[in-house]
Length: 182
Image (tube, rainbow, N blue to C red; front, side, top):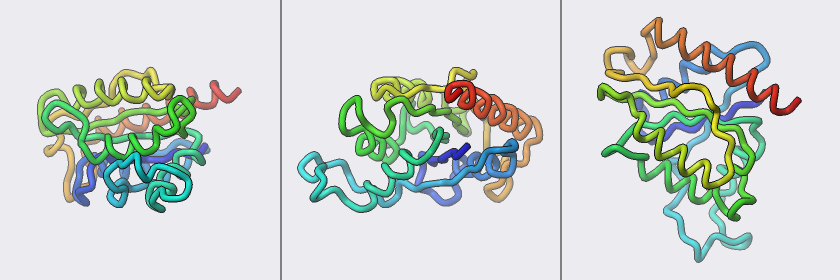
C-alpha cells in the first residue's frame, strides 16, 4: 500500500511533521510512506487553474495524491482551524469539483498541538473540507496528541504510548484500505 503523508505545516521543526516521520518508523508490513510538501504550492488562483497555466508544484502535488492508495494528513491547529497553507494546497487539489484527486481517496488525519485538545478542532474542519470533496475519511477515532511538546525531543516523537497508538492506527488504516479495495 502506498501512503502519502502531507504535513500541514511548512515549519521544518513542526511536531506534525514529526508525527509523519514517526509514522515512517512504525509502518506495518506492506505499507510504504512518502511525504510531500505544500511549501511550494502558490496561493490558489482560478485564473491559472487550467492545463496550460497550472504551476508545476500544483501538478506535482496533485500527481502525488493521485498515485497514493491513501493519504495521511498531519495538521496543526491554528486559531481553532486548519492552517492556511494546508487549506490552500487542498483547494488546488480539489479541482475539478467532485472529480478531483481526492474524490474517493481514503484519508486519515493526525494532529499534534501544545494545547489540551491536541488539534481536534482543526481535524473537524478538515473532515468537513474532505467530505465536501467526496474523500473517504478514515472512521477511526481522532488521533490527536495533546500537550505535544512534552512528547517530542528534537522533532522526534519519543512518547511510547503515543508511538504505540500511532502504530495501531497505521495497522487499522492499512486494513481498512485493504478491505475497501477488496
